[in-house]
Image (cartoon, rainbow, N blue to C red; front, side, top):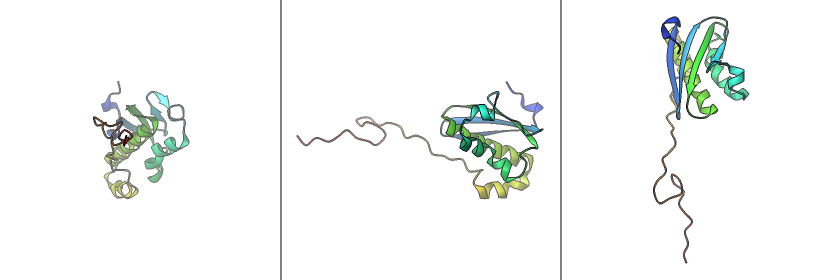
Length: 133
């Protein structure tokens, strides 16, 4: 369990069913996700890029060590949750960067969730094939 008092800042990011707890401390720019390196955890370059977007935007990519605990959802959803968590952590460290992060859309929580399945149909909206005879 990561203790928040030994880290400079703690923030939470969510997307779909993923929840990311992000801890930041001044360091060499090491990013750890679920006790693994970011390259090991996120195999796709697009996911790694998504996680580091807020750091690249503010040019602080080598200034902070980021420790992330993420749970739920798929890898793409988790990357979105981590991006939101990192953005919120950077905002706590320096409230003056709010405009830049907001303009880039990194502080907006993507509220889209999976629609539940309804009774009498195959999925959320897809009905069974209609037969006239």
